[in-house]
Image (cartoon, rainbow over all chains, first blue to last red; front, side, top):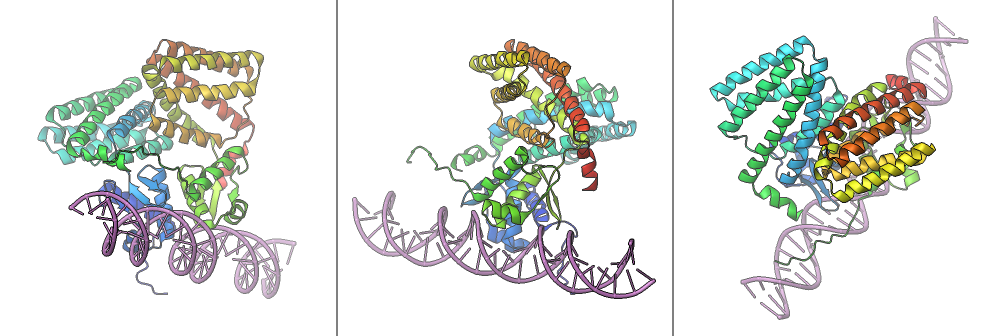
Length: 233
Length: 233
DNA sequence: TTCTTGCATTTTGCATTCATTTTTATATGA
DNA sequence: TCATATAAAAATGAATGCAAAATGCAAGAA
């Protein structure tokens, strides 16, 4: 009865916990690249049997985070330039919709909060504090998505955004690109304050397209092997 | 380096086959409603053990086709009116993007084929042949998605469309609505022939929004229990 | 050397088994 | 009669076992 090592999380099934855990391992880079995902090793590390682990692998594969090769196990999916070129237009369409819905449905408080975050982010921009900038940038996009009040939209978007995170590109964009991104955010805030959904949607699409270019450049520059890697899979 | 053609023998794992099989059972209505999915029964019927079945259930749940209740098994997800209201705007955004991309990237042959299907569909419309109309309607939407040449977009769209199929609404739209849908298709073809992506996107969004209204009405009218059902789950 | 080829080891796919929880049936008392 | 408690049955969650496939390695041939 008194099992001290009972670390189970109540009311969630093990496979779900494991799914989340491995997802985090992928995002954090503990698992990366096109590394194999050895079942036995992970089982020992997580202290579970293979059954729930394998269930988790199937789910992650259906999300596009892993690639399953029959009888050869799972590999962490690699994000090719081609995949990025496909992903960002879709994400752009979804963010555009989010912007449109947010303009129509956000509460004044939500807009105020986004404005506050924006100015804070602008401050980080002028100070050149990249890390803090990115954090707030992330939070603003999330806030717009939340203001859209469409969980399905959020889920779809998050799935795609998760796949983009596979790139693990260094966020070393040029000063010019950073200034441009900040300018786009100015436009976005302006449109949101006027609740001009059409305009916000347009800016969002443009913003995402520029981000696409940045990510593609980063992949091409930083890890050229990403493109090659998949050729052998 | 021996550069022989990479002709891999296509192999499929059992869990994958099972996933597809159950998916079809859901779409065909063999499994429907919020029905429980008894593992034992399905195992016997498919002649497999519980392990691959359960892997399939996890995947289908992550697609939103099933709902997993810890220790209480899986149920076929029910589509509420609220969910439909969420799904269609997202599908609209994706179809709009598909239209935009199709205008930019479709080959002349692809456009010709879509035009041909359109006229065939128009014929079915005037003749009042509903079933044939729907089939071609489906194929046209698929053709536009294909012409967009973005597999990620198609995958995302299909996932959402799959969830909509859960509604299993009777396609008994009014004559007025049918005429309207046909008129929208006329507009779509026109835009596509002119390769006017902005216009096509706009029509697609409108088209999907009208379809949303139709589906919501069908759910409300036909099976009002769909809305109630989920309240007890 | 470098490339095969056969064999041992490892890993994966699936079935089976064990443990825990939920559900159903039954009994008991107010 | 109804409600509650309790026991039996069923179903689910997770671990283990076993067969098949893949991987690694070493010995031998070109």
